[in-house]
Amino acid sequence: MAKKSKKTEKLEKASVAEPAAQGATAGEAAEAGDPLFELQNEVATAKAEASKNWDLYLRERADLENARKRHQREREEALRFANDRLLKEMIPVLDNLERAVEHAGQGGDEGKGLLEGVNMTITQFRKVLEDFGVKPIKAIGDTFDPNLHQAMGQVESAEQAPNTVVTEFQRGYLLHDRLLRPSLVMVAKAPADPAAAPKAEDAPPAGT
Image (cartoon, rainbow, N blue to C red; front, side, top):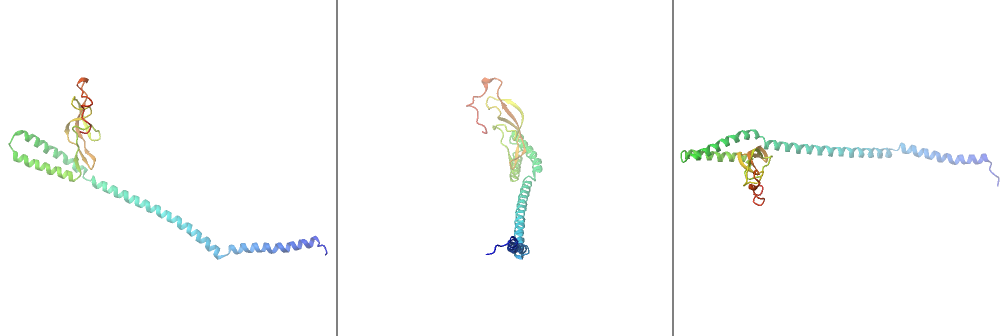
């Protein structure tokens, strides 16, 4: 068998490699121009965009719902306390009626009918305030609370534990658990003579 020359071997290798290279180039060209391949790319891009838009929609919807709930709470709060100023002006009228009844009660049987009429007015007045969410603050005998009471001074007391409200000059009121007017009170303090101070076991419990 005749030995192939180097030139012949090179020509044979070139003839084999050329079709392979042409096949690869043709495959890439087919992939680049393939409508199905392009459609798949477009579908994948569209899905990613749709997912992004859906997330944005959910966030916007959640923000809108939170804003709606916040507005509703603020509206309800405004309605609950819309009469705050009016009620503050009404309470001193009730104070004066109660003082008038207290003063009239010290005068015997004179004007008894009028006194009963005023008492009925006071009862109705209190009912109206209650319907609007106003309720009186209990002070005497309770521990002094700066959130509810305004101290006008202190008084030595051997019967009451220190910091206990012993006198109320003006009744306080709450409007839906919000302070409408504080109670004006006097607060007990320990006597100057330690021997006169009540023993711990004799002191009334707080809040009684």
